[in-house]
Length: 289
Image (cartoon, rainbow, N blue to C red; front, side, top):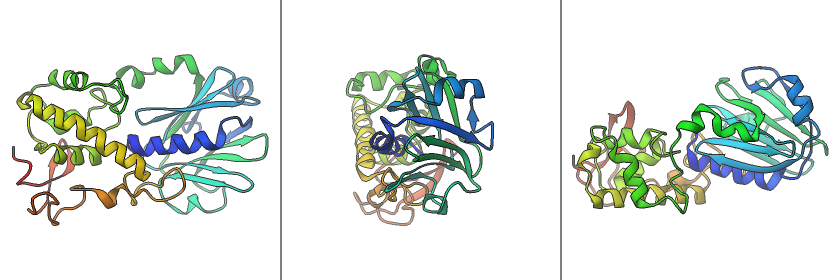
């Protein structure tokens, strides 16, 4: 599943391409993918202008001039592809749909703009979805009610970060990092990378962390996410960034998917284990439980 930096790169790409364009039609082959009734499409999507593109955690929001929004979750295999006369934007799970003629067999929704350009939502496994709903009601979605604060917001302080975790003293730190109700958008890659940077074993209990541990973890969560956004996403296996290029962050990963290689800090061999039900990469010398 794409993590916060990947979805952020998609948001930035869409901001450049679709804000100001007028939607005139939307078609779908799967009601589960496009959760909207035709009356709402006719009244609030058709003839509306795109006025903004936003992100909350791993969810995209395309705001329309009618007071409605398209809320998008890519899940595992979702893609967003914009096709205009002289430009093509492709972001999402990498397969030939990113470069081939569309629509194709994985296309679930086609949005058509007044100038003839199109925005395709593709999803091979049909787990992703797009909802058309009043913008004012987005924050009432159960996900939005539960999701924690954004770790990269300038007003999200170290003290707030610590407070989110200390409520779970008997939870291991990796499980807490992956819990979207604690903080938003941290997935497996960034949890491993940040824990390595903070010299914390992923099985350490939250209640055992010192103030210095929290400060190191806070700083490294933010650092690895900002680096990933700068590099256009986390992985050249599972994601293509907002310019249609493969993400390059994995070229700079310190531990994730580097089992058997040497730790760039101490030279010991990186190992893989399971923590919180996920494949987890650590340096056994730098990250002692």
